[in-house]
Image 1 (spheres, rainbow, N blue to C red):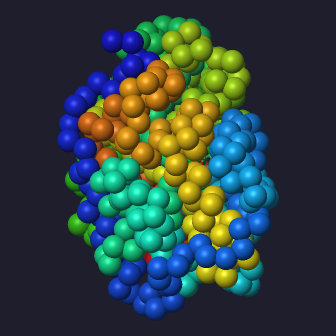
Image 2: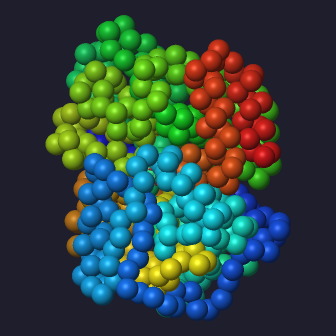
Image 3: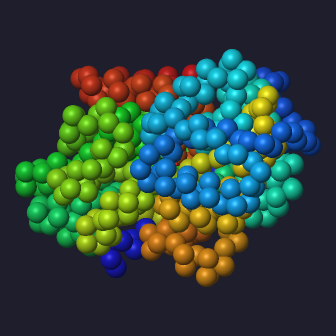
Length: 439
Ligand code: BGC
């Protein structure tokens, strides 16, 4: 089997592992969520324009946004789209500006967030409106899969965002020339973390960089995939509902693996975003990078060909597991153009919007009602991801907001920065991660 097909190899039940996130959202609904808003009239009001905050400001991500805006303009020609994108991968800058604007009661009309626990704090602070009524109006309850709906709902069944897509985080992107230079067969990727580390050693011996990682959130994405590989689905899910101890031996083992792998990275990239960190893979100067499947759009935009220039495969030890995240847009309380926001949410969740956006973005549509002909518009990688999402066990990404509230994720990012720039102390990292989740 060619490795470019490798992500869809295993068939296991979908929809597992959703309990942890449902529990997190349920907890947020019951623990002091007095500020959260609900009601049947979400999105009534001024529809003359819509101010949209994303972090899709450049490169392949901007191309995806452009494709979405084109459909939006066709569907709602009377609502003017205002691009309020803030650059910085995974929202590293946008989220800081948003926090200040929301606290100052100066919200945009809608903003990019992630499905899952990330927006817990915003719901509790009363920044967001319940958009369940829009799910009824746009008939989204039937269009979205259960694994996604479980992550969107709180314990009362309220929903505070509308997803535009589903991304997968546990993917290794590998340079074919670099693998060949190291004597590795690009069609036979490692299937365990230890075998993968042995491959990295061969790449190093060939004089190339074994693996790259960039700024903190890319480090967290790498770490979470190693946790999934070492703990397995059940124990990984247990990290978010208290059933697995962050201080336990299995986490220590994963952190030791992480430390070894970080030892093969190029520290000059630690302040870079995902694209500069992926460039050495594109240029054949480094072998591996773990990144979400927005990377496939980056390879496409750079004219690189799957199978020839690069291959992709699940992070070793995570085959049959889909590390899930979804970009999901909100309706803030006090938005100046709630009607514009409603139109945006309508367009991004429509079939046309999801097809136009996702074919360019590398993700798969959140909707499951695509015909075979419509699925045929997607790349080979994306069709394999659709197949995997339907069959694999689904777990929630930490780095991309599905698993934990933003506060905990931010504290983890800080812990990883300290680890990468300091003495690489596993004991200290483990304590910091445990404290981050407790926060
Ligand atoms: C988002 C993706 C985006 C990636 C890199 C993730 O958090 O969900 O849409 O492409 O960050 O910026």
